[in-house]
Each structure stands twice: as C-alpha cells, then as structure tokens.
Image (tube, rainbow, N blue to C red; front, top):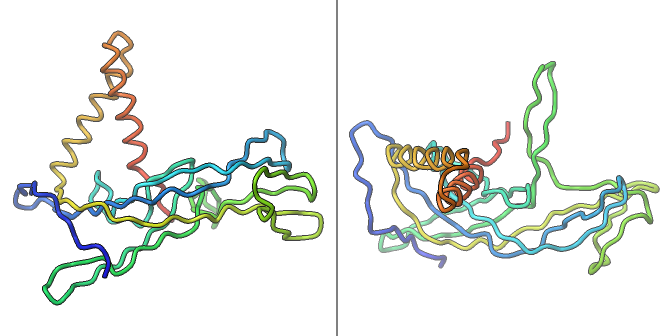
Length: 214
C-alpha cells in the first residue's frame, strides 16, 4: 500500500463563497538531466547534472489543478497521482508516476498571429561524429542518415510530502506579500536583507507559474 494522506494540523477558515482546495505536495527525487555546455550549433557537448523538482496538485495562486511540476533547468514533467481508499476509509497513494522531460516551445498554427506555447520532448540536432559526451556511451541515437538526434527523456521517482487545505483568500495574501517583496527589490536603497527576501519572492513567483499546454 502506498503512503497515506497526511494533512497539516492547521486548517484554513473559509469564508462563504470562497473556493477551498487541498494542495498535495510531492518531491521528484534527484535524477540526472542532459545539459549542453557547447556554444557551437549542431555540435553539442553534454554533461549529466543532478536536479530535483517539486510538484503541487494545484496552482496556489489560482486553485486550478495541474499535472505539471515546478520547472528546474528550463524543463517540466507531467505527474500523475492516483489516490485510493482503504478499508478504514483513509486515503492513500495507489500510484505516482513522472513522465519524460518536456520543454516549452512556441508554434504558430491555424493562421494565428500570435504563437501558441506547447510542451515538447527535449532534443538536440547534431551532425554524426560531432557530438561529445563525457560519461555515457548511449546518449546519441541515430535518427537519420548523417544526422543524430540527442534526446533527454529522463524521469524521476515521485515521493509524497504532505497535504494542506488552502483557500483563495490565503493564496491572495501570499501573492500580495510576494508583490511587496518584489517591489522592495526594485528599490536599491532598501536594506540588503529586504532585497534578498525580494529575490527569493521573485524566484518563487516564477516557479509557481508553470507553462500550460494549449
């Protein structure tokens, strides 16, 4: 049986008409991703870089459900979690899986004037014999004559952390606090510690806004 639901003791007081949601939080455990350290077109040089992600079942700012983890290294993963209920009526995780790495690309289709953001597999094009890797012999996959496509399709093990109840009022308070801290970052006369807090808020605000697939 998978890990059981763990809800924090602090329960949010919800006003009538306010949207309440349960935020489930997960860790995508350390795994290696491909990182291209070359500046030469069609001649990538790769290293393996260990990284992690966090996944939240809902966007804390909007309360909307999402299947995308928080981005790290300019990529995302789709996460699928299945809950079940045991004989005592307690919820537990039946399965939690992480899909391959995805990157954000902009495409134009259907005569649209503005590009549409899509999520696409991560790959690099390289001419045969020009690519290099330092610690793996199986990175290069021959896709066509004289052309290699290098794919980064790594995944992660998914570990459940905890759950908590939130409401839109609470989310708005968090966002207002972040905005104030970001405003302090723009004021270079502010104390250094306030600028540091603002930098953290800017990162958290960006992390909490994963790309949405159209």
